[in-house]
Image: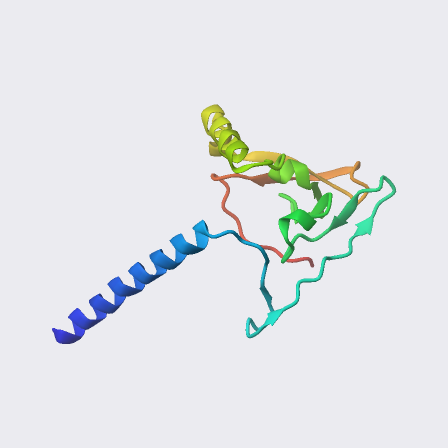
Length: 150
């Protein structure tokens, strides 16, 4: 019985500590991003990625482990039919708000219109950003698996 009480106490304390840590992290201003090596053992310096550039002057590449402000114009994805290509980043994430107030206003507008509750289908392109080759569906109603390039 004592063991059970002890385990419950540890569990409750862990939840409280995690909650306090999350609240303090969420309320603090983030000034830098910290990335870890592939084994998650030590911090490594973040290096701004270099992307390919297509004939239209758009950058293309993966958005994995990249700061949002460094995303390419075309983000590498696996489409609905397992075809690899690129989605326009602006279509994936939309316009970036310029202030916290604008972010709240934009979110409220999306919720009011029902946009946040339905899947969105976005075109997948060749790296030229013009030739459509598939679609990419994202939204709360879509559950899938993470796929890696073949």
